[in-house]
Structure formats: structure tokens, C-alpha cells
Length: 585
View 1 (cartoon, rainbow, N blue to C red):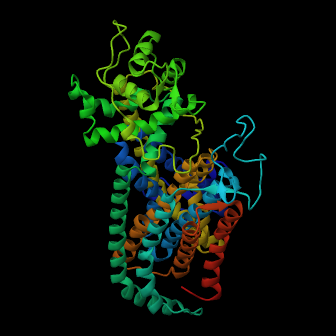
View 2: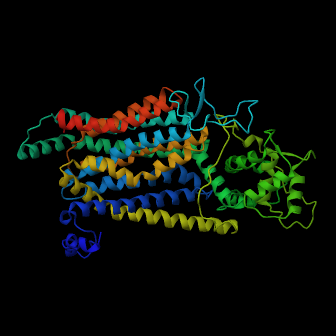
View 3: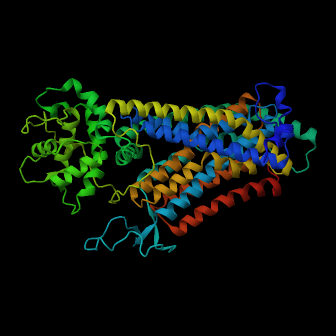
């Protein structure tokens, strides 16, 4: 479509020199759809920039805990939160806020249905006696055995996924954070009575009475949502300290970055090295490791190094020889001489068996990080310490489901691989800051005109703006989560499934707190009436249904996946029935 076609649409906007967006009222249907597609793509790119920048910060050890537990959840909710905010700031807020409600409802429902179904579809494995087969049975031929047999098996009852207890815990939190909806909806049911034949004057009068009755409850709900938001972030922080899905995500990000050449071993260990520079020369490094911060760093590095060690521990006896040791060094991006590697291996092989255990392997690399011996002049020189790392490993080093970690290769920048650790960290922080800032700026710029377009499209088609934004808005703001859920689940490990589903439930919790808090703030400060009972019932139905399915089982069959997928169209029908047949709102 030629830009000339938009000239007429831009005439009114030209009256304001600071407004460079065409006025939707002066656009025809084709132009509105074109602009929605264009703005939607920009918002999609913006949400990806925010996500990619946040994940880059997981490679900065000193920032990773804060980013993983606090920054990622907040920035993930920014696109939806911005849509809700801008929908209620205009002069016609009472009508335009339907776009924000649609974005909030559509985001919550979509995240709990479509990506969840895709995770089950892509991550399904064979179920034997109701248990997912993530581990090769003893005696099974490794050249023949597969987690899904036969390939492409679509059995509704004999294939599925299993997930960790974190999903159950998050489902309970999701139920708790629904209280904000109950606060505002409870009073709404007492003042909003179904009636289909309001006159314009009666409608305005009813809205004014309703807004006055709901105002204080909107404030109460707003305060409650903010309190729950702060509590959830603090809980994420505490769980991360104790080793949770957030902590696992941080470790997995570092592993993938080293595999792709974005990060070197010493880059990943930079935080550990900084904290322990002052300890150089101490005779007993194990005493140093008793420091809580240092112990946390060692635990994190055990998680990071475990997949590299396991890759070459083919016979699963918990040891590797010198040649395998050299291959691991290549994989973690450290290019040192064979002589230096031999000296390190000899120092780590305390019993002279020719093999080293995982504990000896980690101790050796910790020694290397603090005291690099790349340029050894004395071939017999040993590291300054030999740490006992066994006590820093998780109690169940093999994850709860016992599955092997299988990582998917992804396209990420490789221009940082040959830099020094300090320079790597500086470049990563700069790139992350640029991506997050650019993404957030684009969201703030394009959310408001996107709201205007969706609202105008609803008017032109004589369809509630809620339905328009319910379907279209999440495709722009949450498409990355949908794709990520599918790609991550393809790894077919219990850990990857747990992390993927935990992210989806966490996003629903953020919608219940951060986004709903913004919405209730608008209702209170702008004096709006809460005319979204049908939408609220739709959101609560899907969350209650999903919580029930999660809390009553630890395995979801492919059949359960199709049931979950059906919640998406059912939720739309619920809204249509309550509004157009029952006469609610």
C-alpha cells in the first residue's frame, strides 16, 4: 500500500507537530488493518528486545539473581501493562478501556492455553504406568531407545509431559493473586444488574452510580495488587537464593552462552573471581568457601559445569579422562596449551588414577578461574587450592525427574567469544541495556496509537473492542512466549518443561498483580465504572481450570493438552454469552 493513501488520514494529526501517527478516525478499514499489523510488528519486536536484553543480563553473575527474580517478571509484563495504562488515559476512557481489558484477558488466557498446549505437543514423551520416560531404562540400547517411540507418536493417553513441584507452588500463588478480581467484582455484582434496554441517559446515570459505589473498592484492590506484586517479587528473590527454577534458568543461560561462544568460562566465573581476589595467597581455600556468598557462587558454577562434564561422561561412572578434560576446555571457550591442561589435570587427579571425578573437575576449574595457569613455566606448578565441592552440589544432583539435560543450539552473537572476561561482561551489560531501553521505548511510543486503532476497528466493525484486542493484542505482546514455550519443550527434559510452564504461570501471576493493579488504579483515579464482569469471570474460569489441572496431577497427557487448548475458545464464548444473551455489563 502506498504511503500516499495515508496522507488524508494524517491531515488531522498534522495539526499537532508532535503527533506523527495518523488519526484512526480519518482512516478507512484497510488502512486501519494495515496500521494495526505494522504497529503490532513493532510491539512484537519491542517485546523480543526486552526479553533478549533481560536474558543477556543473566550472563552477568553479579546481576543475574536480581534480573532473574525481579527484572525479568516486570519487563515481561511491560507490554501488557502499557496497553492497559494507555487505554484508560484518553478522553473516552470508559469506552477505550475495553481495549486494555481485552489485552489483559487475552494475554492471561492465551498464555495459559496455547503455549501450554504447544509445550505438551512438542515436549511429549512416552508414558509408562503414567510416568514420563525421561531416563533411558537400564539395559536399553542407547542407539535405539528414544524418549518418544515411535517417532511422531500421537497417542492421546500414552504420551505426555511431567513437571516439577514448582508448577504446583506457582499455581497456588496464581489462585491467591486472583483476590484482586474478587474485591472489585464482589461490589460490582451488588450494583450492576443485567438490563438490555438502557437509554443513553439511563446508561450514563447507571455508570456514574456504579463508579461511585466501586471507587473505594477499586482503591482497596489497587493496594492489594501492589502488595501482592511486591510479595511475589520478594518470594522470587528468596526462592532464587534457595535454588529454584529462576536459579536453574540463570545457570542454563550461562551454559547455552558458553556453548554458542558468547561467553567464556572465566567470563561466567567473573563474579566468583572478583569476590575472591582479596583471598589470593590464603593457604586453605576451603575455609574461604565457607563464606555464604562464595558458597552460593560455587553452587551456581556446579550447575553451569555439570552439563559439560555429563556430555563426556558417556558411561555415567562420574569420571572423565585427560582427553575428555581437554574437550571440555574447548567447549567452555578457554584456549590454553596442552601442557597447562596436563598440569591442571595432574593436580586435580589426587589419587593418580588417570580419571577425575566431578568434584575434582569443579575444584580444578575454580582454581583456574582464580589463579589461571595458562602460561605455566613450571610444569609441576599446582593450583593454589584444591576445594572440596561435593557439599555445594544440590542434594539431588540428578534433577528430580532424573532426565538428561539436552540443550538446543540457538543463534546468538559470537563476537564476544575471544574477549577478556572483564570486557565480555562490559559488552554484555551495554548490549543488554541498549536492547531493554530500545524495547521499552518502542512499547511506550506505540502502545497508545495501537489502543486507538483497536478501539476504532471495533467501532467500524460494530464489534466490541474487547474481542478485537483479546485476539490481536497478545499476538504482539506475548508471541515470544508462545514460540519460546514450543522451542524449549522440544528439549524433552523434565527440567526444560518445568522451566517453560513456570514462566507461563509466572506471567499469569504478573497479570493478576502488576497489570490488574494498573487497571484498578485507572478505575479509582479516573472514576471509571467496572463494567467488565463477563471478562472477569472469563479470566477467573481459565485460571481456576488450569490450577485444578495442575494441582490434581503431575503429568499432563496429550489428551489433557487438547482440553487445555479448548479453554481458549470457551473463554470467548463465556464473555459473549454473559454480555449478549444474559445481559451482564
